[in-house]
Length: 322
Ligand SMILES: Nc1ncnc2c1ncn2[C@@H]1O[C@H](COP(=O)(O)OP(=O)(O)O)[C@@H](O)[C@H]1O
Ligand SMILES: [Mg+2]
Image (cartoon, rainbow, N blue to C red):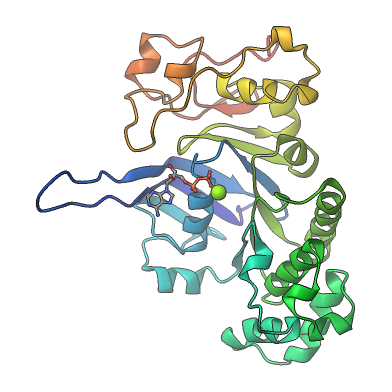
């Protein structure tokens, strides 16, 4: 089956300035050679510490940020190499839900007006009917259309944000930290709703999160990112039962509830990640890795399929050992 979305060797550099006098600021390599393919209807988790490039990857797939290298394919057709406006046009079946979705709503506009405006911008007609449909789909009653953002709870605002995206009939939805900042019961509500909407509208999700317990419950496969690279990509059950990359194992061990291992057995993540603006040669994780060798410091390992998981490591953990 053709993947609905495919990213091939995608790189994105941000910022960077050349100055006539004085020191120039080097660009940040926020995404470095990421490749992944998402099947229709799949939920792919994108996991990693803050600053590893998750949001930049999402914004680039969406077309808000231009890639500096690599390709993006939608239904097998190339949609990269375009300026942002044209990129958004050809990718209008991809939509993005910001982590603080409520903050994106105009406080002076009723919910109904916000939703209708989103449809008007896309030139979509029959707006009141569609607004009513999507409000119902996210579990809000029709009266919500007359309310204003400040009258709604955090959970209701998340529902509105989802309704606004659904009104545009997306096929791929990039969810950026959709449960962050919510308490447990609202988190559970949001996840149940997302699952329900995925089935009802046949959606495909890119689920960006740093919350491993949520990812474990929600995603079919998981891509683990470290400093702009995907270091491991495997079915969710594999990643949690048998992490192959030493970084993945450290991440899991930092959340002992997930592994059931005693803290004494854990090898905690030592040191800070190097600056994304000044990466060492070789594997970016090598300075923090107990298994690193001269090869790791010399050559950045490519993502390669080994025994059921894709891993970018010169010394991956054996499946039985992990
Ligand atoms: N506009 C920008 N200019 C320069 N660097 C940026 C910009 N936005 C983000 N970055 C840097 O790019 C890297 C990736 O950031 P981001 O994609 O936001 O990561 P994440 O979403 O995983 O926390 C970080 O090092 C961040 O500091
Ligand atoms: Mg982010």
